[in-house]
Image (tube, rainbow, N blue to C red; front, top):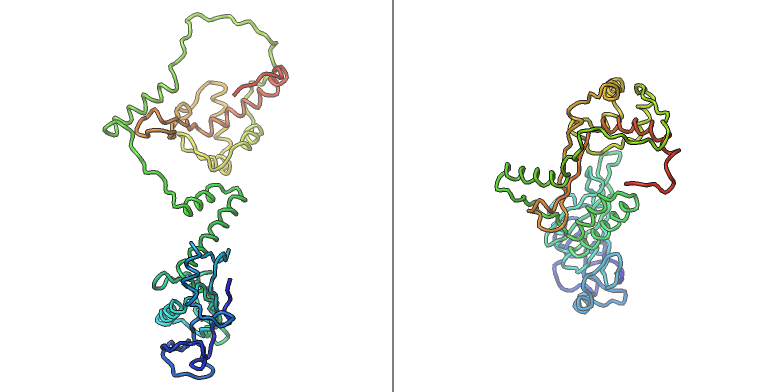
Length: 354
C-alpha cells in the first residue's frame, strides 16, 4: 500500500500541483490561491513522485485492486471537506476525486445528517460516497460526520469483503438459509426458473400428478377374508388403554417443533403449542382412542412434489413429501409414549428399523 503524504495541500505554491484549475474544498469553486486553502490535489508519493506516472505500471500488474488485501498499489487519502451537504458540492468533490486518481478518500466534517446508520450514495462514473451521520450541537447546527469516497473498483472489493464476512458469520451461527443467500448473491447464481410438468392443462397435470403418486404409494394390500390365528410370542404387556390425561398431552407437545409445515386441518405447530386449547385437543384424541372416530382432515395428506435430477417436466423426476395433521401426530406421540416403556423391555438388542 502506498500512503500519500497528504491530500491537504497548499495552492498554488506547491511544486507538485500542475497548472490546472484549483477548487476550494469549502465552496468548491475556482480560487486564486492562499496559504490556508485546502484542496484535493494531484496525489504524490512520499518521495514526491507523481502518482499518475505510476498508474499505467500499476494497472499492468493488477487484475483487480483489493482495498483490504492490498496486493497492489492503492492510493488512499483524507480530506477535511468542512461541508458537502449540498448535492452540487458532492458532485464537484466526486469530479475532483476522479481527477486525482485516488482509490479511497477519507472524508471528514461532511456535516450530512441522516437517519440511516450508514448511507451509500452513488455519484457519477461509479463513485460511491459512504457516510455515517453527522450530529447536531446545542445550537442545532450540523457538525462532524465521517465517511469514504470510493472508486467503483474499491467499492466492489469492499462490498465483496463485507458480504463474505457476513456469509461466514451466518454459517458460524448455523443460519444456513442466510449463508446460502449471501453465497448466491456473491457468485451471481440465480434460482432455476419454474418449469411446468407435462399435461397440456391444469387438469391434465393434476391427473399426471395423481397417477404418479398413486404408483409411488402402492396399491392396498391383498388380505384374505378369513381371520388368521397368530400365536403370541410374548405374554400380554401392561399398556394403559384409558383416556389420555392432560399431563400426557403436555409431554407430547414438548416434541412439537415450530416453523414446520402443517396438514390439511391448517393448525400450525405454533398454535398447538402456544394457544390454550388442550381440552379441545384431548377431546378429539380420546374419541379417536375409545370410539375410533377421527376428523376427515386427519385421514388426508397434502403431498408436496420435490424435484430430483433430470427433466423436471416429467413427473417421474419428483418425489413427494406428505404433510399430515400436527394434532394427529400429537396423538401418535401419546400412543408411542405408552407403548415404548413396555416394548423396550422385550425388544432384542439387535432389532432395528427405519
